[in-house]
Image 1: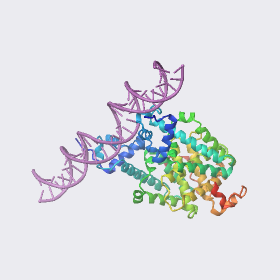
Image 2 (image 1 turned 90 degrees about the horizontal axis):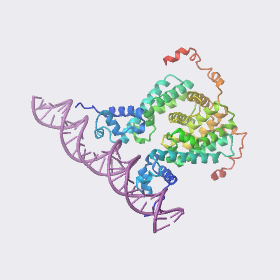
Image 3 (image 1 turned 180 degrees about the horizontal axis):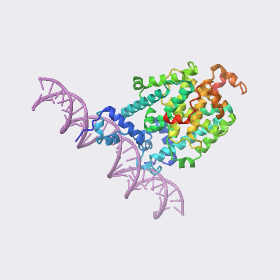
Image 4 (image 1 turned 45 degrees about the vertical axis):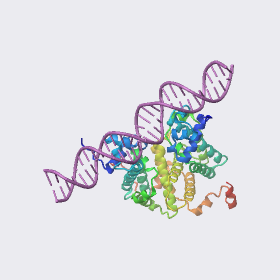
Length: 213
Length: 213
DNA sequence: GGTAAAACCTAGGGCCTCTAGGTTCTATCC
DNA sequence: GGATAGAACCTAGAGGCCCTAGGTTTTACC
């Protein structure tokens, strides 16, 4: 009987296809072995255990995703870059739900640090914001806000969280419009007081008060 | 031997505690049975299967969460309400990671519709935004943006996604500042053109162009 | 053709889900 | 106070998944 020609890379690639087909939570060593026409035990020569399989899948998907984003953002700036980044992000998440789910798992920080994915992600993300003229710590705050929004939106959309009749694509575009104006008018630390001047401002007066709430 | 006094409600409550203790993904019928000093088969009189157990847990957690939010938001408006809502949301998510994870699972829409959780959530969320003077469809767009951001932020924070040295609480507060000014200056549909006037605007000129990108 | 490494297998233990079909407790009615 | 129904709980067992130990077959290369 011809051998399946298994290899760590091929196994992980198959896991990615399986994830998109049946959902990341159903990516199991046994199911994967079935796909290759092989016993489950045979796969353990190529991946140490399910955890490692999931981790490798996460890195593969993360690399693919940031690759698409890099391509989309290349040569763009400002809102153009923002829309391209967000579009590539969401497109990948919706086209590859299983792979995208894989990118969300908790993975050993040491492993992440070794891979290039994190560095590339940080680079393209901070680069995209360069045009908005933010400086630390505002820059990191903005990055966190954007990542949260992109991830939250795609995650909720993929799990059917948006049930209102309003078109989901339209909401997404408005969200990007909104984030763009937000980045252009990012509130500086010292603007906080002025903006709340018409509301009650005696609340922060006595620090002791806070302990009771 | 004294009986454990099992009941659907008690089982689900125990599942919630178990989820926070060992993570939602480890909430298993067997583990739950062990907790009651009972065989796993005994639990199947009270819940149909794991799926139902998870669904009930999700509804329990969702109800608890929206309850806290309702309390926090009560009597507040504007930024006050926004901060209270977001604070209660994040506090619950971080204090009850297992329960919060449960709220994120895909659950049969029919079941959700039957429960009150969705209605109460929509009510308090739209109510919180009342002070910002938005009308449909901007209102729904804003709700989706806020939900995405809250969920994304807590989800990323809980899974260790924020590795930069910047204080996570501080970033959260700045995100709320930013969202507040965003809601106060929500971009109307017809403002889009003006805001991009300094960028290339010939891009949208020919509708035919879009098909190729 | 011989050899070593790689690819794959069988066997088996442990944990998990879930069903079928008991037995034991408990509340309630006469 | 005894009978009875239903609830609470149990044993037994099938099937899927994870993973290890140790064996056999294929492949590549000298």
